[in-house]
Length: 117
Image (tube, rainbow, N blue to C red; front, side, top):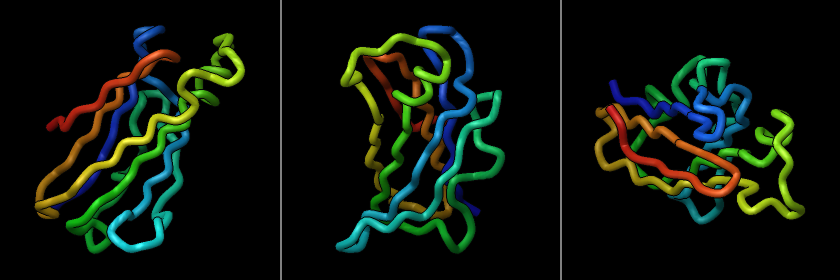
C-alpha cells in the first residue's frame, strides 16, 4: 500500500524540526482541497503518514511547511517579512501503490527537498 510521508530537518540547529505545521492539499481538482493539517513531532516526523490508503491516489499535491512560525517559536530572529515564511512543495504522485517520502531540509534562508525512500 502506498503512502506519503515527510521528515523535516533544521539545518541551522542540526536537529530534527519538531513542531512544524504542515498542510497537504489536493491540486488535482480546479479548487485546492485541504486534505490534512498536522505537525511534526520531536523527531521531525509526523505520527502517521500524511496520506495513505484510499486517501492516497495519483495526482498533484502541495505540502505547505510553515517554517517562519517554526523558527520564531525557536527564538530565531527573522526579518519582517521573513525571507521564507512558508516552504511550499508541489509534487506529483504517478504510482499510488508506492511510498513517496518527502524530506525537507530547512533554514530561514533556504530549503531543499527530494524524494527519499
